[in-house]
Length: 124
Image (cartoon, rainbow, N blue to C red; front, side, top):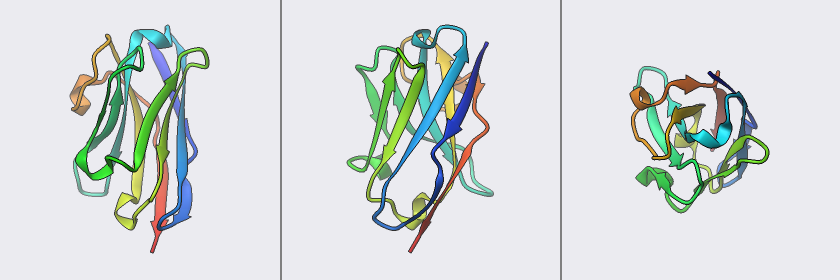
């Protein structure tokens, strides 16, 4: 079992930046591949980015490539999502997720552990 707690969400103007953090506790963090998802009201939860347990492999959905960066610090049991050049369409709740194993994954059902979510609001 692993517990995930997100932080770092908030209100920012378009073009601004935010860094989301997800602190993990419980089982060994380095054993888990991690992901960031987002879900708008009435829509399915979608992958934003994923990172392998070593941090050497990453994946980004097309809409955030070149603007967002996922990273992890296994010594601090934390995964990050640096979000730059934010757009109003990035506004929604962001969730941190973890899965056993080394490989990245793209769908919510592939992740067993979830944080409570953090709201990101980008004003135009």
